[in-house]
Image (cartoon, rainbow, N blue to C red; front, top):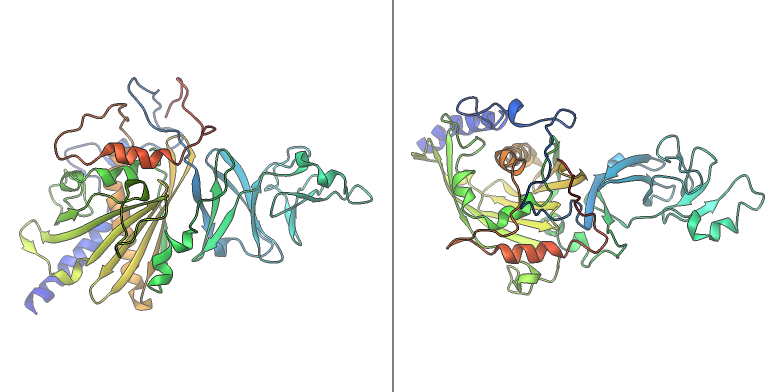
Length: 411
């Protein structure tokens, strides 16, 4: 009982630390010097030996929460270098199409409106369905029946899935259909399996990094001992209160020939599963905190490099799912959206704390992710996990038409 009572101020202090900037104020530059906004960030050209994959992998991309697009609502999005509009028609169906009208190139998101089962361009009121096909031209007596049959008059449409209060669209450089299984049966399965409900969300600043970086960490077990041995604090911070030790296992994937937790083969080619466990958390690296505060289960899954889900189970409090949904809007500029789901309604405040903890963990990596190159040939040493296997998993998300780098590309 004494240890539990003593742990209360420690936990409260740790929560306070989560709200602080993990970058230190001593021993290195401040965060305002380390990170630059879109307008004033210094630009540098690609350097010799820089071998990052193309900036936009094929796959499912998060657009917004379902509640943000009600019936009759039209919204504009810029993702993977593309201008898109999303709308919900009178039947409640969500459509995602190219933003520019096939007639005069007008942006439908600026002044356009939903009309019945489709959306109309503001300029001449051409109407398009959720599948992007032209449905009606008001200036023609027959509504433009012949013109509506011409492929050149249609808009490019993008497959949409709506699950657990979130809307995703499928983007593929060569127009291939979404891979099976569906997100609800794989990446988002813990939400329905554990009967989780939405608890919290958090929008972070854009990271000036390649979207592959978080999934790339699954191969690098040793950095948990260096970058993440302090909880919610920069590794150079001398006043950090909490020290953690971890146990990690090499990532699993279908392309690796791996198996699920129940022993069955992994069947979703998009998934990359990383098992990690917090062994201990100590106050100032000396006083161990009770195991009550330490997650019993922690498993992170990637659906493509851009979507990450961390499944946690904390004694007494229950299960949680933390989502990191990344959207590259330009080369080396990635939007970061966090979502949290909890098993018990009264545990939602804990979900908020976990979101801030995830934010702090990502910020620990940020300084490294934003200032690195990708070697064409990695200098592996004994004990390193297989970079080759990770590269093999990552390559499946690119196709012949994926955007490639040019020599003068800067970031």
